[in-house]
Image 1: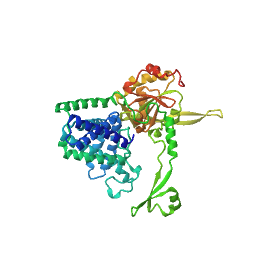
Image 2: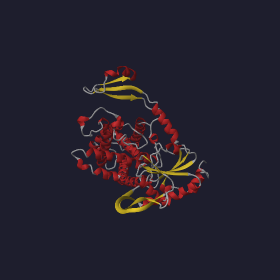
Image 3: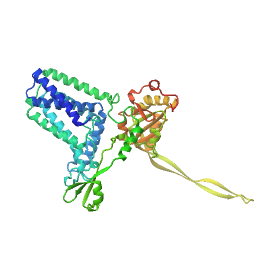
Image 4: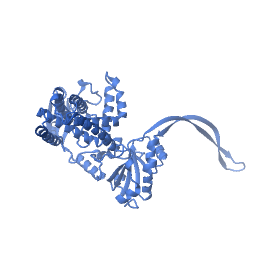
Length: 500
């Protein structure tokens, strides 16, 4: 689905609803205002719902924004606001749920015409907030490396790879928009937002005030519970991400890599650094004339064809062991069933403890055996000294440890006894930390490492459990919803050996 298709569907629904309200309910004061109410309300309900399906996805996106805002604002005269963003990042999940619920409820308020003046101003402020986010995403494409966003005089030509946040997440993972498209969408929405503020008295109202308020109250409670059900108690009930059930990771990864390799350069976009003039040449013409465009005077940008298979996070599926050896192929080519445990973060605190280490120096004496031509070497203690060293000790969250010891590992132990392979993947970390955690949880299976964003994309649970068969994702579970091994074996036909 594209933004154009989605807009058309919502516009048709808004038109039908407006006509029904005008002819049937006689509630319309101004057809144009009511149509925009219904259109914007339906848009917010839909865009909020596709994010409510996966609140953690929005939280992870906001963490990226907060990190970029911290580094951006810390280098400006308003650097005093920078410390706010790490705090917001720590509470990104709560921020996500509040924002999602507010977006959907605001959409309902537009549809119902509840609290018209408040709704009009709230809609304007929320659209302005979204415009700020999408504008930041898009406009950072003009900011070269090493230049702060607010150093406007140093901005250069638009380069997609300069963008700090690659997509805004307006529609979650359901619909990915180009940053420019997303930004322009929000700019357009500012028009009805301003209209509502200055013409809120012409907005329609459905039902009585009591019914409207009751509807909003029930909806708010229901939406909070729905959001929580998609990350606190279970994984999202609808999966819009590339690592969905039924996907063969190895095959999809190969297709994406092949498509990427087959991308062709069709044109060169050439910008004169002095005049700013831009010309576009076909690649054949550029290759004949490239000497006329030295890099000292011109900026070059390749214009490429789109890959036949769009790139997704599956292309980034790269796993290594703690020594840095690549184990991706071993995981994906493994014949039979395997459990892949995903832990994007192992929460722990550290303490530096001073311990005493005893150093012993030995001396070796060569002794001549009297009356013979033989020699012997004897070892003796020359000195013993004690010294203080600092040792890092990891302290793991007891509640997190129990997720393994009481829920996950009992199932994994049974799986290993029947020949099913088990391994865990976590974010890059100190090998000593991972070894300590394995001992703390009594986990016999190996721990591999990968990029934390990749792990967050695979499954929305920490830990999350993924059942693979010949590289294909068979099922995924939130740790709270993990069935017993007998239930899994009965449902998915796990055999008695790894190859089955």
